[in-house]
Image (cartoon, rainbow, N blue to C red):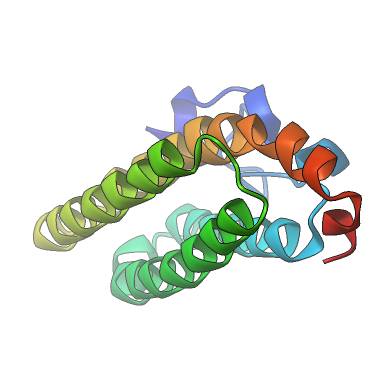
Length: 154
């Protein structure tokens, strides 16, 4: 539940705060398009949090899930293209993580809609932010920047 969040990775301890995730410069990976897309994910998470804080989470759940699915598809394609271009040795496992996240997104999205439960979907988004974006995506950062310094200009 939202009240159980902590200040870890920019998540506020108080769910009544206006933003669920406050973007910090240290979240940047150094590849502008990936950073911008991650900010887009954060914006969507914050939009759902705002709706939930105003008791309208159920009414925005379907469009939020659709946005996340569409945005995730675009983002994963861009990110995987970067990893392939820079011959990231962990490309296969990272791509598999993306495939697993897509499947989990489908399941959690379906279940959240079925139950009319925006908290269920928010928990999925929180876990995705904390484990995939803040941890797994950082694993390729050094390789990406070392393999091609101009990657940071894209």
